[in-house]
Picture 1: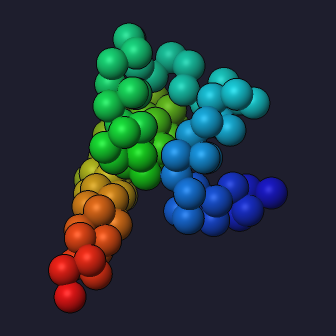
Picture 2 (picture 1 turned 90 degrees about the horizontal axis):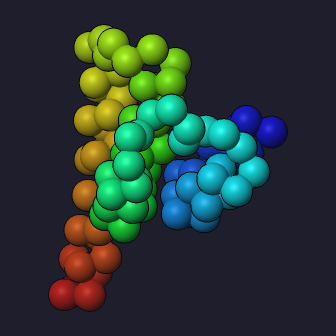
Length: 90
């Protein structure tokens, strides 16, 4: 089941965020308000999932390896956005 959720999160991160929000307590205790999760949902959804997971498992203190995972998530999110624009151009 966790592998299926990981594949779903990579292929459809916004769907995964909605399912995690509806059926689990994955996002509780990480964010103080609603603004950051909403912006993350709209702009960088995979980064939102990775940051939430890393923060929950580390207890708030991030290591270098965890920053690398967050950086990879940002690059993948930006690559998904930029890849669509590149295909429309050519």
